[in-house]
Length: 68
Image (cartoon, rainbow, N blue to C red; front, side, top):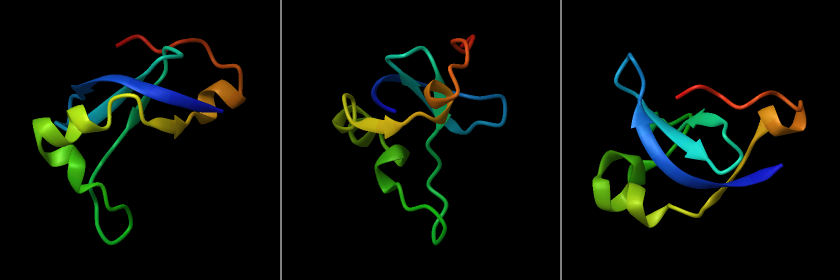
């Protein structure tokens, strides 16, 4: 299920995590060549992706909301 990004935080390993409207979190790493997300590296890039919808596998599984 597609869910919009509403915010971000860093995890204990200093990786960026997107906070989704549904209450779930999803890592948004920039790890080329596997995953290319250069926008995550800057504040303006992250802000530009607010509202962008990511596929939330946790919603598909009816998982409870994450604790930030």
